[in-house]
Amino acid sequence: MNNQAAVKSEVLGWQASLNLSFAATSEKTLLVKRQHVGPLTVQRPFYPEGDGVCHVYILHPPGGIVGGDCLAISVDAKAHSHALITTPAAGKFYRSSGEQAMQIVEINVAENAAVEWLPQETIIYQGARLKSVVKVNLAATARFIGWEILSLGRPASNEGFDYGLADLHWQIYYQNKPIFLERLQLDAKAFAARWGLQGFSACGTLFATPASSESLVAVQSLIGDTKGRGVTRIDNVLVCRGLDNRTDTLRHFFEQVWAIVRPDMLQRNACAPRIWAT
Image 1 (cartoon, rainbow, N blue to C red):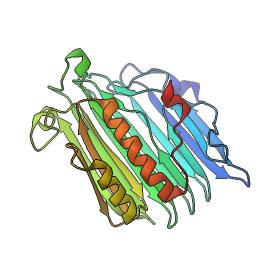
Image 2 (image 1 turned 90 degrees about the vertical axis):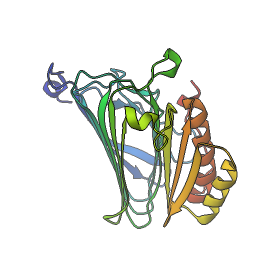
Image 3 (image 1 turned 135 degrees about the horizontal axis):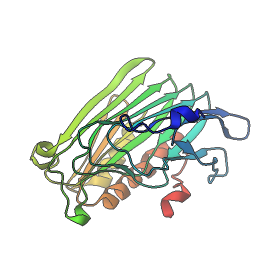
Image 4 (image 1 turned 135 degrees about the vertical axis):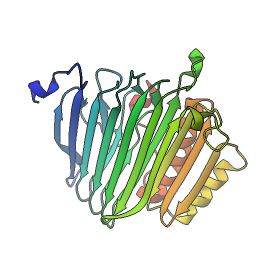
C-alpha cells in the first residue's frame, strides 16, 4: 500500500483503488492477488459452498463516498475460476456541495470463468453528485451475473430526491465487442416523472449472460402481473428491472431471480453469502 497515496486530500477526497485476481486450482478458486491503495480492501476469502467458489467481501472503511472521492475496482477472473463478490453493508453516496464522486469497476472474465457481482444496495442521498461505471469484459465462454440496486433519498427519514444527479453506466463486452451499453441519468425530474422512476425510491437492474430462453420464461412466470417488474432477453443477455417503495423488497425479488438463473447458467443452486444474514 502506498501510504502517500492513501492520504486524503482536502480538495480531491479519497483516491482509492483495489485490484483483485482469481485463479482456479484442482480444488477451488483462489484469490491470488489483492492489491489496494487507500481505504478499499477485502476480507479473507470464504467458501460457504464447500466446493470451490470463492466468496469475497469488499470493504470501504469510511462507510460512504463524498464529492471528490474516486474509487476504482478491478477484478480479473482467470480461466475456469469462479468468484462471487459482494459487500458487507449498503454503500452510500453522500450529499455534495458541488464536486462529483466517482466509482469505476472493471471486471474481466476469462474462458470458462464466472463472476457474480452482487453488492448490497447503494443509498444515494439527496444532493449527491456521482458517476458510476461498471465495465464487464467477457471471453467467449465466460459467464456473468451482476446487479445494481439503488435507493434514492431516505424515505424512512422523509427525504426524497429533490436535487442531485446520478450518472450510471453499464458496459458489457463479449470478445471485445459491445453487446450491452447503457447510460442512465437520474435527477429530480427523472425521479418524479411518469417516464422515469415515478417517485419510487428503489430501483435496480440485474444482468445475466449467457442466459437461456428457459430462464427468461421462468423469470416471467415469477413476475406474473406484479407491477414495477420487467424482464427481457437481448440476444443471450437477460436484463431484469424493478421499481419499488422498499429497497429490501426489491432486493428480495432480485435474489429470487438470481436463484432462477444461477442453476441454469452456472449449474449451482443459489448460496447466499453469510454476510447478507447479519
